[in-house]
Length: 127
Length: 288
Image 1: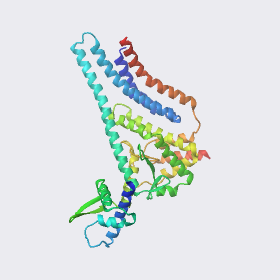
Image 2: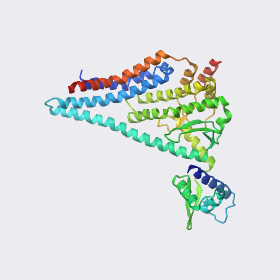
Image 3: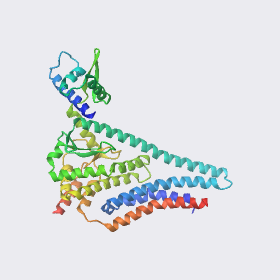
Image 4: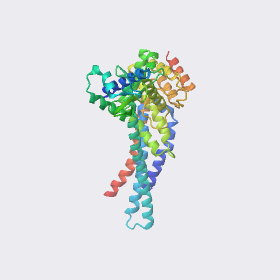
């Protein structure tokens, strides 16, 4: 299922970019309709209902924003791909601050000058 | 001496002065596995002694043939405190476990959506180097950024990945979680903060050792220098304390210290056995 979600979200990201550059067909509303997403994924031979199910699940996970447009819905990614990457990086770096529960375990947190000096000394001692 | 007093004194000793002394003994980190055992047994023994002291007081007061109103009041108070201690632990365990699992699941889901998979490692497209793992029963992930891949030499990257794999394989997250639960349940008056800080260091030291077993120490150290020395995004981080210098020190001293390891392990076993013997033996004697 994760792989499908990835494909659908990527289709939305692609449509989002082309939509912003003004090539959206007719509609002024942001995002894409389920039909547009389905068309974009034509190569994968997915049922329309499958695409809609995945879109709804992404919306429930708050990864996709759903907006009513007449009788149907339009879907837009909550964040661009770069913004979502930045969000994850932030969580990973912030998580090293400690003192609260640690969800992620980092290889190395922020180092003080003394830490770096100690590391360099240990490295020099090896040679 | 009456059992409750002994157990109570033991609980105080195990929760305060003893961990305080351990955390001021940096040589302990040279035998990280034994040291880990020592911290775990001390924490467990402290909890057992505290609960045992309360229970012993309750049963001791009520079992005397004619329990006066004073005895009943003391027993009720001791029972209430015991219940509060146990309740705080259970509540903190539940809260911590639930929130950790939720944060990890949400993080993992988004990693899977944006990261590119490269040899079982998730790669985020970003210029700041990071390497971390998302622990979990099913679906643990090792995540690095593109910049980590470009900045590290192959041997260095292997060392970093070996370090992260060791975290996941040994389930270091569960040990950290247990000490987080203790710290959040009893944040003050006991040495739960220094216990957790020290266990965090030990977990890193253990993973460093495991990573060096396969590769070389030089690669791991230079990976640490490279990743630690890279500029962090503005305003995102505080200091992480003594962990890095401690890791450098242990990495610089690869000798094994078998005698210290044995002594520390025996101490750990003794500490755990003490409250158990003090509670169980008198209780068994009382039955016959």
